[in-house]
Image 1 (cartoon, rainbow, N blue to C red):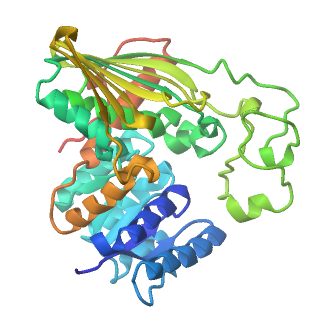
Image 2 (cartoon, one colour):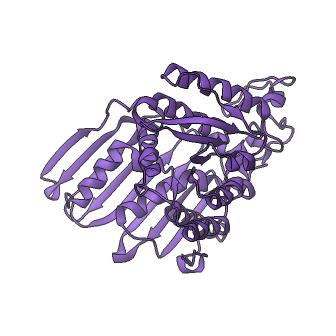
Amino acid sequence: MREVRVGVIGVGSRGRTLARNMAAAYGECGLRVVAVHDANVHTMQARSAEIAGLFRERGANGATVRCCDSGQSLIGADDIDLVMVTTTSDSHAEYVLPALATGKHVYCDKPLAHTVEDCVRIVEAAHAAGRPVVMGFTRRYETPWRKAHELVAEGAIGELQMILIRDIIPYSRYLSGWWRKRAWSGGALNDKGSHLFDVMNWFTGELPTAVAAFGTRSIAPRVDGTPSNCRICDRSCDYRQRPHDPTTFAGRHELPNNERDTCILTGDSDAYHGGSVQFRYPRDVIATYVYDFLGFQADDQETMELIGRRGKIRLVRATAGLEVITDFGRKRELFDCRDSRFDGSHFGADRMLVCELRKFCDGAPPTVHARHGLAATRMVAAALQSMDDGGRLVQMFHVPDASK
């Protein structure tokens, strides 16, 4: 099997996870990481050694992973076939655009960018280059979500009427790390909600026409006198992100101007930690997303219900369970969608994504591409505008879109 040589820009949590999955699937898919870049030199050096070792363990004899001093030098290297951008959202366009110009294959992690304007630039550049950008909306690669989509497409519950997605998740890091500022991330809702907004578009096969939303910051009030960062705070706290370590931690693990342990009680974040978002789709389909990023560990922390004319489907992500009620409630079936990949990252989706990347590099169209990413971030922007305006109805045609 011909190797596909991969360069990864950004080897923090997400880049590292995908590199580990590529190593695990090396014998099956033939993707090999040959170069990395990260703004944190300590992280880059540690990850390059770790990733090289994983590939050698999987049979890539003599595998090495070099450190590049910039993302641009990685993009311009002759020995890279696929550029993977897994940096913070505000730098996606900085790397995706020049990567497209080289003619290389390009992967961009979700969300596509932190602003609609950058998303538009990427979509239009991909169109001009004639090369799609593959994206990582992982629900499209998770087995229960695919099974639910198959059942809806087959007409198991009749014509789709409503989608209800609920996220009550322990993601307080969204108020502590780089996600906490819209200027850096497009809002915490962009990072998490874009996944689920893409699901809504996927299941309806349409784009929404209008949105109304309410957001809250009520659970994390400003507390005067709170230390600015977890690492310099010795208090007991349910929202702690980092250990008390005031002398050594930050210099080795944090990016410049991107501390990930800012105390959420300082009031530094401009994110809505919770909210309710409703979209109207063609044919009067209504899709609702209810979330709270200061939620709790539980099997049902992320669920989806699909309501049709003749039945409904309930999905529980953490257990890969589907409850399918059909024939106007007369028939009930339970599906356990766990498979051999389920214990992997993103419930096995990342392993499937790696296999998709191989097919993409061999010429297959991607399951998810940049235009899907633009659609999701446009929805995020409209929802945040509605929240900022006290729940005002926002028509989607007012949100900028790509011309191609």
